[in-house]
Image (cartoon, rainbow, N blue to C red; front, side, top):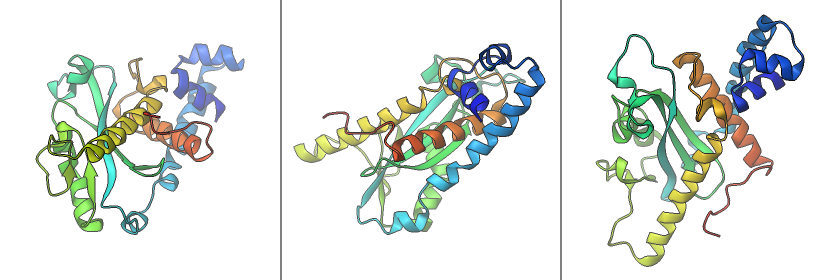
Length: 228
């Protein structure tokens, strides 16, 4: 497991990992990574709230939402569907991330999505919109301008908000950005180009999200109000 976590944190090559752990055989390192990254990813489902738990919350605006983009090597065959405007039109994948607004808890992670084909609102419409209508018909989500077009479900900042509501929305969205930054501390989903294919990237992101949530739960990391 430590080999897998080192791989996710630094996204080192097998040679670099081998030197760090004093493991000579590269196939041993490869086997450990391929075994443990999916196992860590599988723990994410235990950390996410159930739809029943979410429906029992009293808040109307219950979740915040945002998309985060991760760089990858250009998939073959070439397609502009992988082009990410957040990454300077270079190849990437996008994940839809939703948090509970009043607890340090991830509620939803969806992806990888082709950012050149689906923008934020189109990604929301693919899956989470239906889940909200089915399980949380009386709840709403707070999103940024990229989620305009679903006003019956998603609220936004707007110039008519009273001062205290405007400040609350700003704080919630700043908190969402802070969570995304916690994910991006892991080099496998940040600056280094992912070189192991899109399917494996999903396992890496879910593993990173699960470990991040465990850190929030045991308070080794925090998601305190960024304005305090």
